[in-house]
Image 1: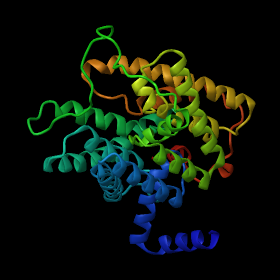
Image 2: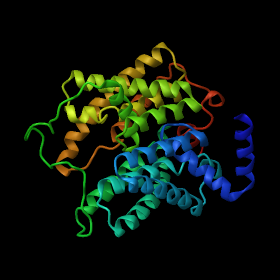
Image 3: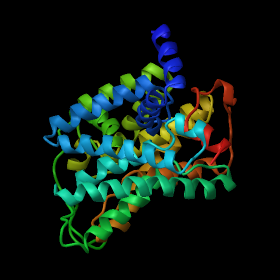
Amino acid sequence: MSAVTHGWHRLSSRSPLVGFVDACLRGPAQVVFQNNALTGLLILVALAWGAVENGQPRVFGGGVLGLVVGTATALVLQVDRTSLRQGMFGFSPLLTGLAVPTFLDDRPLMWLYLVLGAAATTVVTLALNAIFKKWGLTAFTFPFVLTTWVLLLAAYQFDRFTVLTDMTPKFPGQGPLAGGSFDWDLVPTFLRGVSQVFLIDSWVTGLIIVVALLVNSRWSAIFALVGAVGATLLALWFGADGASLDKGLYGFNAVLTAIAVGAVMHRPGTLVTLYTLFGIALTLFVQLALATVLTPLAIPVLTGPFNIATWLLLLPKRHFAPLPNHERVEETVVSVVKRTV
């Protein structure tokens, strides 16, 4: 495996085309803070499985299109080469590409909308990273969140689009929760919490993503599961909507927070684990609060809660056990953007 990895690295360094493919493969991995082409490839396999399983292969196609368009846009804009090669400009456009066909009906114009949205996500990434760098932070997946919110809100004003968020606009306190019972099939629910990071409802997809994380970092895989389990159980304890619980919708934001705080920004240890557990709870509460705010608009929270909670956790700069850059999981979305914009 090591020989294959080194051979691929040499080939991608020599060939612009292979280098572009390598950058695209690292994009999906950077969603979960990994810089590994094999991890990215496995995640793409997981997304393909989940999209087909749910009868929505166009969602996978949209994700791949967004990934390619976002990376190509960064290339045209002549961004920092190192950042480009690390998949830094592929992960948010990938998510935008998954979101557009998930939340809009399938029409020819939808694909043009997706392409424009993916390109815009790259521009927004550059803009937000320039801002957040002043506070020693990165934009994480917020370029995807902001761009997708704009695309969905704008789509309400276009005759050619139908928004498919399955949400009923209502003000806080008006009517019950969406309803539905929780079937107590916990392990698949936890794994769906992992898959929902990529807007996919499939425990098989979640399992493959965990394996993909193990390829590059066992701690990232462990904390991903901790995030999914912790947030889901806490939401269950507080009486959150059963149907959403069963789909893993209360776990995916906490998965990202747990990986970022517990495995990427700090060396795993007792204090770091406790801080991460607190962060998981904070992420859940931010998610529920943000859902209350966005319900009248009938748009989803996406990974907005992860971004808000993780920024709040990192701003105090309580680095209990910071990882030196050379010991981190190669280069991640955090370490690269802190160095360059």
